[in-house]
Length: 131
Image (cartoon, rainbow, N blue to C red; front, side, top):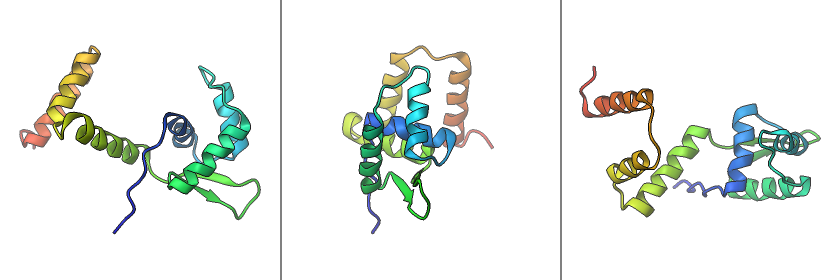
C-alpha cells in the first residue's frame, strides 16, 4: 500500500512552483527566485531551508545529498499535485460532486470564451461525444 501524499501548505506550494518552473535547485537559488520574483515573496533563507526540510519529511521534495550544496527536486509533477489537491477539495468541500465544484468555480470568476470552449471540449471527450 502506497503512502498518501500530504497536502502542501501555501508556503510549500510557493516553493514547489519555483521547482516546477525552474527545475532542481539549491536552497540559495530557491531563496533568490522568491526574493526577486514579481511580486517578491519575502521569505528568509532559514525559513526556506526549514520549509524544504519539512517538505522532504512529508515526501513533497527529494534532496540529493551526494553533492554540496544539496539539490532539491519536486517529488511530484505540478499536474499530479493539482489533481490530488482538487480531488481532496471535491471530497471535503463539495461532498464528491465535481458538478458543484465546477459551478462554483464558474460563478467565482468570469471565464473567457477560450476557456469555456476548452471546457466544452473536455466535457465532450468525457461524455464520448468526441472521437
